Length: 307
Ligand SMILES: C[S@@+](CC[C@H](N)C(=O)[O-])C[C@H]1O[C@@H](n2cnc3c(N)ncnc32)[C@H](O)[C@@H]1O
Image (tube, rainbow, N blue to C red; front, side):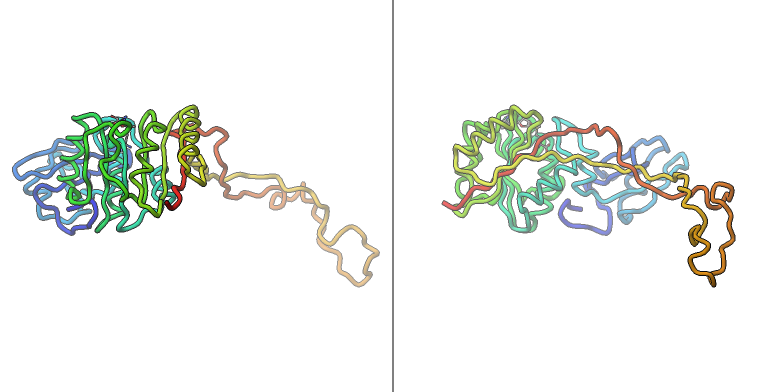
């Protein structure tokens, strides 16, 4: 099992996602002899997991069943152990697109935090790209390193335990893209600029507050970045339902001018208001919500030009 390559069978040491329901999943590390308790009973790793196919339905000791899923960055984002605030898949999808990430890209990131974004970046830049991720909190840097190794993506990432605002990313002139998710991104712009390749690249900074965005945009302008734009990604979930609407009364079919064409047969005149099949119509419709909660943060993108 690897986060960047699909495997058929579950093996000792793999991470699997136990799916109990759409709102109830948990990641576990498979160890022979171990058991995991769920509300449907115990899952015995040796007999229930090892050697089974990813996606299998597994019956637990109390008779209930779960699915065992192959991990993906999206499933990891909603199941990872939180050590920090994290970006979610709606923002991550836009970050990946707008940073133009692809297999082979070299990316610099700070802070690593809980590794939510890192996993998505790694899946996109595999098999020959590289992620340089900087985290100044020693335990978070250590935990992320351990997880990347366990998830078989360690060869694609270098974790550095340092302050990106003081010491930068630890690499110069290599990056195609830079991502910042720190409280004072404006202090790291100078280091981002130095990390980029000579031909330039794309930068993204994620900030929850507009004041942080303003300072970051000023720093980006001061350092010669172009195409600066900030956006907020909101999910607009449409509510699908059936509605019954009254039909307007347009009068009898064929009009009321009975003298218009003498040869026309007159339609059967049933006033719509007295004919139940014409007075209303039921249809399926989708309505957007009136209010949209869910501000996660502002995404500021910019281009570092050549030179
Ligand atoms: C919001 S979290 C990042 C979450 C991360 N993007 C993820 O996907 O899980 C911010 C992280 O940045 C780290 N951090 C803050 N300032 C930093 C700095 N100057 N240098 C390096 N890391 C920093 C914090 O310790 C924290 O772990």
